[in-house]
Length: 403
Image (cartoon, rainbow, N blue to C red; front, side, top):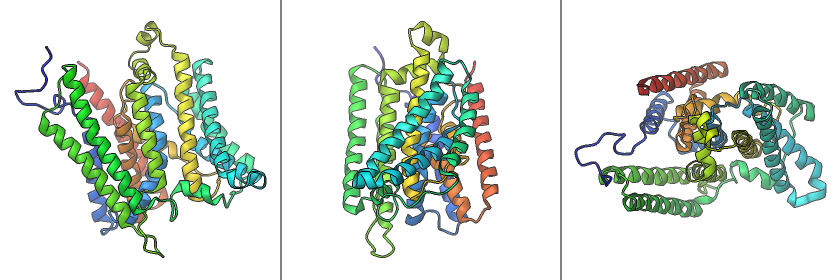
C-alpha cells in the first residue's frame, strides 16, 4: 500500500511542491521589493499594480499557449506580429461595419479577431505538421509576413477611435467591475481554492496516493488565499481620478483568469493535454502509442493563434486603436515568460501557472525600468539578457537531473 504521507521528514519534492514554481515566486518577490526601493516607493502603489495587471494580461494570455507549443518541442516566433495584424484587422472590421451593425459591431469584431487568430495559427500548424517545415522557419516567416501585412492592409495608418463597449475589454477607467463585484469574485476564488485543496487531498487519500504534510498544505493554500485577497484589496485601493470610486478588478484580469483556468484544465485534465506532454517527452513513444502527432501539432498552433486573438482583443481595446506596430518584439517577452515559469525548451515539461508567473516577472522588469526612466533600447537589452539567463538556468537544471 502506498504511504499516505511522509513520516520521516520531507523535502520540497517529497512535499509535492514544484521547486521551479517556488523559485519563480521568490524571483517575483525579490524583483518587486527591489524595484519598489529603486523607484522611491512607486512600484508597489495601487496605481502601478493596476497598470502592471493590464500589461501582464496580454503577455500572460499568449504565454498560456506558448507553454504547450514549447512543451511539444516547437516554437512560435510570430505571436507579436500576429497580435498586431489581428488588431488592425479587428479595427478595420469595426470601422467598416459600424453603420451596418450598429451596437452589435463590437462583438462581431471580437469574433472576427478570434477567428483570424485561430485561422493563422492553424495555417502555420498545417505547414509544420503536414508540410514538414520546422516551426522555427514557419513562424519566423510569419513574424515577417504578418508584421508587414498589418502595414499593408491599413496603409500604415492607425485606426481609431473604436467602439466604446469594445474599449471596456481593455480595462481603463471604465473597464473594471468596481469594489462590490471585485470582492464577490474574490470570495468565489477563495472558495474555489479551499475546495480544490480539500477535494485534492480527499482524492489522493481515496486512491492511496502520497499527500503533502498538512502544515505544507495549509501554508500553500493560505499563501494563495492571501495573494487573492491582497490583490483584490490593492485593486480596490486604486480610485478613479475624478470620481474617487474604487476601480476594482480590471476586465482584462478576469479574461486572463478564465484563460489560465481553462488552459490548466486542458493541459492537466484532458486527453489533449496528456498527448501534448507525451509527445514533447518522447515523440517516438507517442507515435507508437497511437497519437496522431500531425493533427496534434495543428491543434496546438490553432490554439496558440486563438489565444493571440484574445490578447489582441485586449490590447487593441486598451489602446483604443488598431496600430501596425502593436506587439513589436512581444514574442521575446512571451517566450522568456514561459521559460522563466519552468517550461523546458527540450519539451515535455511546463506549467501554465508557472508561465503566468514568468509573465509577471517580465512585465515587472519592464514596468520598473519605465518608472526608473531607463531608455527603451536598454530595456529591450535587459529583457534579452533575462531570456538568455532563463534558458541557461533551464539547461543547467536539465543537466543536473540527467544521471
